[in-house]
Image 1: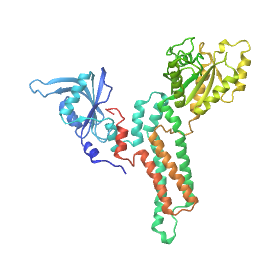
Image 2: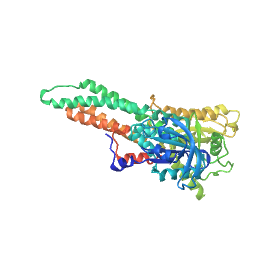
Image 3: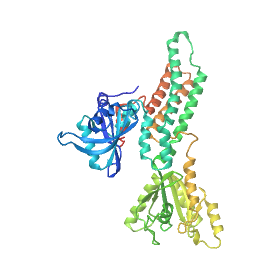
Image 4: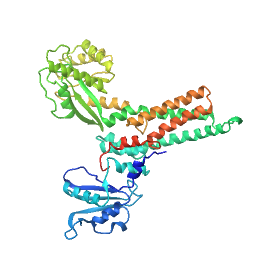
Amino acid sequence: MRFMSNYLRSDLNDTICALATPEGIGAIGVIRISGGNAIDIVNHVFKGKNLASQATHTAHFGRIIDASNIENPKIIDEVLATIFVAPKSYTGENTVEISCHGSAYIQQQILQLFIKNGARSAKPGEFTMRAFLNKKLDLTQAEAVADLIASNSEASHQTAMTQMRGGFSSQITDLRERLVNFASLIELELDFGEEDVEFASRPQLKDLVQNILNLVQSLLQSFKYGNAIKNGIPTVIVGKPNAGKSTLLNALINDERAIVSHIAGTTRDTIEETFIIDGILFRLIDTAGIRKNTTDAIETIGIERTFESINKASIVIYLFDASTTTEEELKTELDALISHHAVVIPVGNKIDLLAENKNDILDSFIASSNQAKPIFVSTLQKNNLTALNQKLIEIIRGDAVKNDVIITNMRHYEALLNTSNSLQDVLTGMDMQQTGDLLAFDIRKAIFHLGEIVGDISSDDLLANIFSKFCIGK
């Protein structure tokens, strides 16, 4: 069941309008107007064909006229009006999209004309909220619209597209329907309690619940990967002063972003940049060099911020100078990073400075490492950076599960976690041979939490929170 307050009900009777393209000067701007009176309001100020008699999904050239001064009507702009007749529109309502010139003045004049003739300014996300309330989209698809707009890499774009096309919601709907069928049979048994009949086979129910639980847990496992795709993977470069951290950052992003100097302690604060490998966004953070004894107050603050970044990181690139670091020093430093729960990649730098016995030195590092095998590079000469890029992708891909659907939304994750707990309770109850009414109660809880995901069960507060994060015009 969907809940909708009187406030929302009254708002749905309004015709709303907003600029659908970014503010600022451009070649064109698009103004969207939606609601029962949308076509009539535009028709009142549009000089061209009678829009009220035109077929849906057709575009018409004309002029927007301000006729408030009858003796001297003013032409605002020449525009293209595209008609979408309900219910065949994004919102499910009559909708018109006006393509006008990209002048901020022109756009504002057209919006003011629409408002004067009965429309009101749309709230953030209100067009998509109407699409949801009119059952053109479910809640996961509506949320995917916002993710698609915010996508900044191939991976985040593809994930949002999959969800917007209903990949996730179809899975959830199928799981929910299967549970509803069994819950109905169990509750039917309660009506015949005195006759000791069993409509729902307990072995079949147990297999069903276990299979659904496995699918839910698979989706839960995908969240770490999905969240990283959506927000970018925080990747911190740490190491001793003058190990080449800033040079590595510059080499990875292919830009002279960080100041490079032979003087130890040049980097005093964290520097953050982004770069994309195989469609996945990494948020790369260069930090102050870690050393125990420093009398520089500013450098001390920088080192403190380094450890704050490590605690928030998913991946830590530990960069060490392969020409001066000993095996014992490397082991000690890597052991100290284990407690921070990030994946640590040891990277030996400055291999171009190693002597003729370079291979022996590198082999000794590999043999002494009790964690991941070190990668050896020359940041100055940009040697072997491809191996580091491949390692970064390998770590992230390794978090992915074999599932076409990937969870990126914390709200979905929490609902699935609650679903998992309820299904575990069902299995425990069956092992304890609980009565049908108790089993039905836990199954209904799982059904409820799955319904929260797609919006079959939603509160006004939840909807307001979700759609308030959209941009105006969407």
